[in-house]
Length: 312
Length: 245
Ligand SMILES: Nc1ncnc2c1ncn2[C@@H]1O[C@H](COP(=O)(O)OP(=O)(O)O)[C@@H](O)[C@H]1O
Ligand SMILES: [Mg+2]
Image (cartoon, rainbow over all chains, first blue to last red; front, side):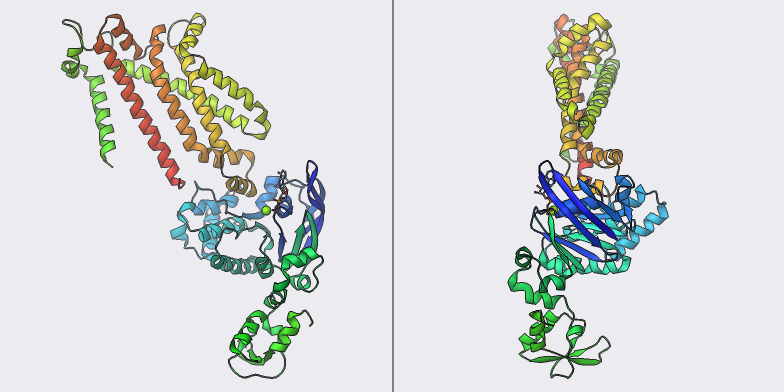
């Protein structure tokens, strides 16, 4: 658990982060969004004390983050940034081994961890371990950057626009991989982005920042149904709202009794996919099947329209 | 890899060694440069020994300049030492602008004739290129790499030794190379105050109006400079290419 209490950061006269309080539950993904210059990076970097706050307090699992030296704190917290920041003079394996080496793990344990992470990120350890970062593609470099951040099995992973430099297709894949890895290691992730699509895709909770303040901290669904301010509303994009609402929910929660004609849709698909299939095939309703292929009911155009309008 | 430039370097090295070990072999080549009866090959000492002493003087002076210039550059690029930057810059610049001959003239009354005044002159003269290059190398490291180094929990010292110095090394080496080449040539003037360098050969040639001496002294220094320059440059390249530059 991360408890941020009344955190403020000033540079001279300008207040960059103003009196922010957030409680981040363990094993969740929290996304900080906002326009450029709204203080997202500064807020994130105060968690691992790359930036020292002017006032306020941050506790990790109940412990003040100033109770140990900054460098020791940072060895316990994963940190991944845009442009990955890999060390160009060290191999992929050496890069991933950075924090375990600093912590003094023995050779065998480090090697095993490097191999485990490379495999998890779909990179063959024998082929990629000895390479230098410049011998990798952008997507591979980004994966190694995240692997390095996770190497010492941190409970908390901070990510600052980690997918910012990737093209859309690799980006979507990287986001899905991140969610899988978050489940695997049960990491608490705090991720900064200015991409709303990414925020809604990844977040359990979203914190919207505007001029240094957190103007709303809520689940994606709450935020879509009840944006706290005009700024949040404009950030979500009025035209996108209904679709975002459908995109974050699975078909399973929109199942109605009864049945329909034609090809069925999986209950695990998003409601947005269901809507898209309905519109494209010109039908009024689709049969819904569970993971085991059992018919669960139907999902209808009318039902989805109600949900898209936030009325269910 | 024996491509043409490397073949040429190997040849230059072979000829140089042959000349230092068996100068008599080259006598016919130098003979046209001198009058009847005058010696065509330096005969007041061993060329090999003078060359080794010359190299030793340059090596000691450059090593000293490297240690001091690098230490200064590291100091002024730490947050705690940033205020010393202007002072260090002026000191190092004075070292460069003060002519080595003047340094010799001032140092002789204090340290006497011999190698010491030359070492001091070369040391001062060699500081600037190393200092400026180290400064450039240490201050132009990519922001994202420095942030990642801090983010992984490296201490200031670990960042310096594991990240900053290795990454800046090609640029630092380039400064050392520049300094070595300048010192190799400048060391010859040390012989005016009785330091044992290849300058002896050139000065002997000037005093006895022997063009062959001047040419052989000059050529040995020039070939040494070219070979050492190339070797250091190759080292920089192999370091740089590993990092994908
Ligand atoms: N070290 C610093 N000194 C002065 N101002 C800074 C510093 N770091 C950030 N800022 C300012 O703080 C504001 C917020 O920056 P940042 O947290 O990076 O925003 P974001 O990540 O949301 O784009 C910006 O206006 C930026 O110029
Ligand atoms: Mg930012």
